[in-house]
Amino acid sequence: MSVLLFDIDGTLLNAGGAGQVAMERVLFEDFGVSGPIHDIPAAGRTDRAITEDLLRFYGLPLSEEVWDRFLTRYFSRLPAGLGCTSGLVLPGVRSLLDQLQQDERLELGLLTGNFAEGARLKLQHFGLGDYFSGGAYGDAHLERNDVAREAWGLVKSWRPQVQPSDVWVIGDTPSDIACGKAIGARTVAVATGIFSIADLAPHQPDYLIASLEDRAWLDEVG
Ligand SMILES: [Mg+2]
Image (cartoon, rainbow, N blue to C red; front, top):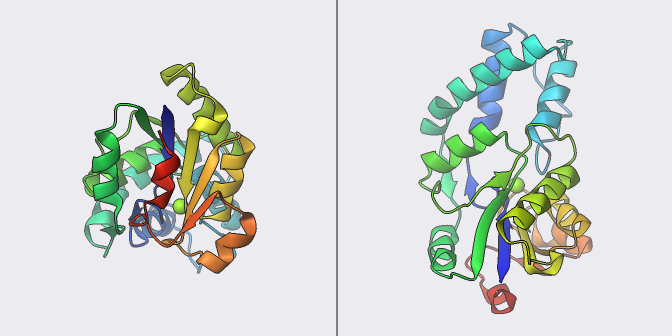
């Protein structure tokens, strides 16, 4: 019995920058700030951490009122952003999920830095919304390792007898590998995001693959 926890951006899909564009639109059009954003990395980080950095960058207060307004506007702008970018489901993903879903020994979940509602909107847009039992998200956590710890709690609630080594964390960044290791899970790094095989190799995932078309790692899942 295994539980597979998937990252979203760069792993299951490429949203064509829709999330970032929607965040920038909210800042420029709803909060009235201007000027280019720089030095705020996004890959592998939580939306909470990215958004806090953005608000700080523009000198906006991290108050509950600002936070609520930002989220409301972001979730209302994201669907339009998804509709007009050149996003795609990454190679092998749909057939892999179809295959895994048939296997009753497996449970599929999400371990992502996305806000939960952002994750739902992205997966729904690309027709991937129905594969997952649930997930841990980046709404409250600044550190991805804390998202992984929340995911582990969820895994235990789904399948109490599961051990950490029965859990697989599949993602496209060094942070995905690190957070999988933080909970004792096995890790699959896939070079379909901004990190290449050579970038990911030093972080020593259990499996390092070019895309989810490569299924050799599945021989160990069961
Ligand atoms: Mg990712």
